[in-house]
Amino acid sequence: MSDQIIISNSGPQGATGPAGSGGGGSISDGDKGDIVVSGSGSTWTVDAGVIGTTKLGDDITTAGKALLDDADAAAQRTTLGLGTAALEAAGYFATATHSHTAGDIGTFPTDSLVGRSDAGAGVCRDIAIGSGLTIDTGVDPPELKTTAVLSQYVQTTRTLTAGTGLTGGGDLASDRSFAVSYGTSAGTACEGDDARLSDSRTPTAHTHDLVDSYVGHIEAPAVGTYYVDTYAATARTVTGIHIVTGSGTVDWTLRRVVSGLGSDIYTADGQGTTQANVTSGLSNTALSAGNQIELQIDATSSGADLRFAIVYSRTTGAIS
Image (cartoon, rainbow, N blue to C red; front, side, top):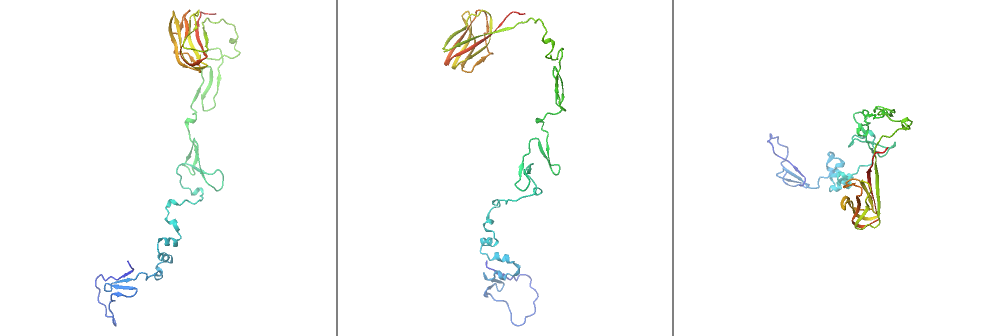
């Protein structure tokens, strides 16, 4: 729409004024040069480009006039000295490097210490709060304090109790120590120079289990039966088997033979170069005098240099 000056005749009719002197009358419609009158003189339209910034008067500042005569927004940005920066999003602009005093820092995302390892200006860093420490924000300025981490400390109410033959102990409110209680009565310890350690006395009658063993070696074991302890003269009990190969593996069974009938004592597969020490899971371990032991090789995988020891115990009569 072109610039217009509109004269409105709406509203109540006022009183008729006195007749003017000389000729007069309304302005007729038509092009009056820079203005076109229409609507029986009620509408005055100013031609485009007639009113420039120089005719706006003092109601608009010089700076405002400089913007009004720009052809487009790009020209207005140039007038304002904005360049293309005005078109970027807010996140495009990085904060310029600057510094603050401690009093300028208002909030932190979490409880933390901020500082520098040396005096003077420079970049501050977060200082880690170690285990057992906390920031007390209930005081001004805040204070760094220790916290009680019970899992890391022993409470002073904990007590150390002296056992049999000891004295001392107590709660941990102070340093504690123990001392050995020496004496000749029950619940006391015997010192190195105690006469009881060197006097002559008759031992109390008692028995012992004598432990024997049968050690064997099969250089090139093959599938079959090997008699390893034949017809021992005394009764005995098998208490353990130790067996290992120099290379390869063997499957084996240790058997007790009574009157030609065999009973398995222990069987195992895949015995290799790591020594097996078998002391549990044994069966048919009691051997009478004349009973026989045999080692049966059930299978072999390049097994060689098989070494074994059969451990027995024999009960004898009392000795003195």
